[in-house]
Image (tube, rainbow, N blue to C red; front, side):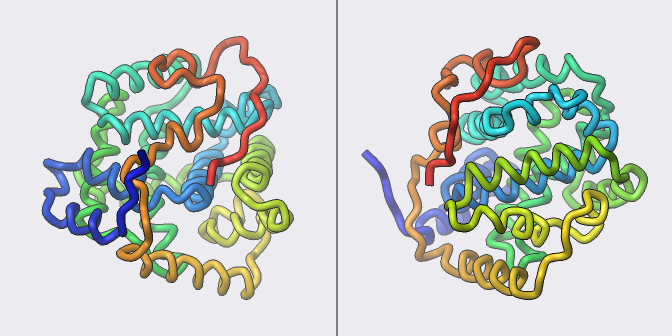
Length: 299
């Protein structure tokens, strides 16, 4: 039975909670229940991934001479990643289920030469992007309590991954990230190819058919200017900016009245038929991957 409620019932619950002590509960209520809109989620996820491949070392790891999963079957690769996030958000990173999924994530990452700072940067995109990108577009839908909880949630995930030198606060993470991007951002063939693959998948998986030809311009408008420059993405038109700004502001202001599903889960929303939700081993990279089943985001 689907449990539908107006958004203000969820925001009222969040206001009564503590951002650090209740971070798991608030993070799920915020990122999944209130703002787990499939199109918004996929757009923010796509830009976060594009940010990560602005780092040439990460781009080469993902591209792997055009044999990486993100090039061979991006729909499945992206769905698997969002399912990981969904399991952690549904159960919490320190729960028995959460620890099992983080262990699977650590096993996948052990196959690749990831630097600690690259993993830390990935953390920063997850913890900071939803607020920063929506703010840049016109208005963030997240309250200070939600932002505090999101930070503590993702920091706990990073601790489970054994990432080192994690900043103590959201503000110090922002400063670290700005310095890292200044040092590490650089154009690369691999990065641009992965970015194009991500945008193509966003078009096919998240956009209605009539809007798919605008996918590059939509993603470019969400990307910060420096990121567009690195990947050679087009400067967004004034019309695209205006439309996105109107949509984001209207979406944010409608939060209290918008009807939401209290039982929404990224696992059900994005997971494919190849996934066993009870078995982390069915999700993510394998040394001999199999092609993805065609999938469209469930709206």
